[in-house]
Image (cartoon, rainbow, N blue to C red):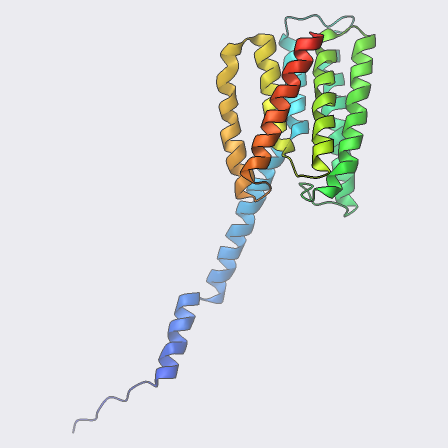
Length: 228
């Protein structure tokens, strides 16, 4: 005897479809964890490309390989002082603010960047003074360029969140081109992944990135032109 198949209620079918569309709780959790891990990786890369990080690299390159004299310092001493004043002090300042809960790890809020900029500026100014006293010309000019760029970034940041990351890449590349030759111009292509990274992280818009790049290139060029 044939028994007609009972139809599943329409509401029940809709419920099952909704669950299938959302996926299981474990799947959602895995996707969330993957997104968190991706975000952490991107932030880690961003930190490695920050202005203090690139300042350390530039200090070492200039101290070890610059054709311009280092005065009474040897290469390692010049590199160590450059890394200390231009990289370590600003990094420690940002880290202390982060540990106190004042800022996030990337110092994302525009207004909260100001104290860190002032600390960085003071350390850069001290570096300029020390290198001038020690007649370490290339490191003196390098530090003076950082002072000038940071001053511009500081004042602009009071009204507009200009990109220090873009400035931290464009300025050092400009320095390298001036000292070692304009054959290094292709290094400016490194700005492309930096722009993409900061846009993905929603840290800046394109104009803030362009602004940081332009300010750093122009100011760095004129400082070197004037003092070197």
